[in-house]
Every structure is written in C-alpha cells, then in structure tokens.
Image 1 (tube, rainbow, N blue to C red):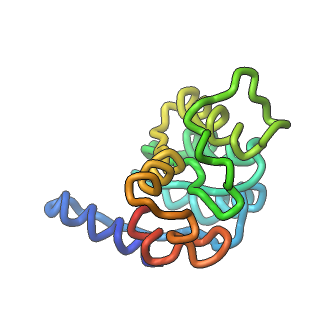
Image 2 (image 1 turned 60 degrees about the vertical axis):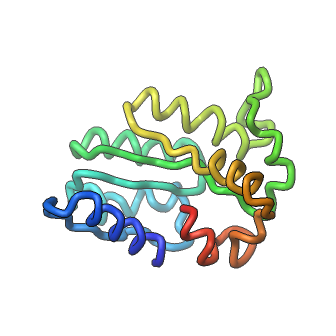
Length: 163
C-alpha cells in the first residue's frame, strides 16, 4: 500500500540511525469484529514496539484490540479517527460535540468524537485526529472529500499523501 511506504520513508528519513523493521499487517476489508480474532495469530505474537492502527467496525471489538495490545505487548499505540468519506456530507459541523451525543445517534460521529478520545485516555494511547485534519485540509485547499478518494471510502493518491 502506498500509504505504508510513505510512512516508512518518512520514519527512515527522520530516524536514519534507528533499526526499523516496518510491516503492514493490515487485512483489507476486515473490520474490528474480524480483526479481533486474526490479531491472535498475526499481531500480538509479533510483539511490535509501535502499532499504527485504524479499523472500522463495532466499538466493543475495537476496544478489545487496544486492550489486548496493552495486555500482551509493550507497544506504543497510535490509532486514528476515521477519515472522511463521501457519506460524510454533514461533517463540516463536526468541530463541536453536541451535548449528550450517544452511540445510537449518528454512530460514526459518536465513535470519532466520543469513543476514540475516551479510549485513548483510558488506555494511554495516542490518537490522531485524522477526521479533523481532513476537514481542515479540505477547507484550506477548497477541495471536496471526493478529491481525496478513489471510491466512496478508499483514498486516492492525494488521500494517501494526506494520510
């Protein structure tokens, strides 16, 4: 994946004397409810030092992935909010968290604005506000979300660059 190669190049440039072993263990199309099972064989046993993570899917299984990483490894964890997709027509007003926002109302908005930040605080992870940065980038460059996507959700080259 182009995004992984960009991250690897950037890390190697920033840390030229570090012994970096970078692997992309992503499984395309798998959401947290499936990844929570595959991680047993392909993530935790690798005992990584750093995990850069994002997955769509149910919050309970997403949290289980983070919790088990904490329980079974000493990895630093950077996880990210969801980037924008073409389904996010009302995302322009997401800078504010409405009072009382719950998982049942606008589930994706709740997950990005309430669940991920809370999870990050509870498990001591770093959270990249990808969603907020994408919104700002689109405003600053007078672009539409479609300008960053190859389809409804997957990034094109410009979207990979931004990630």
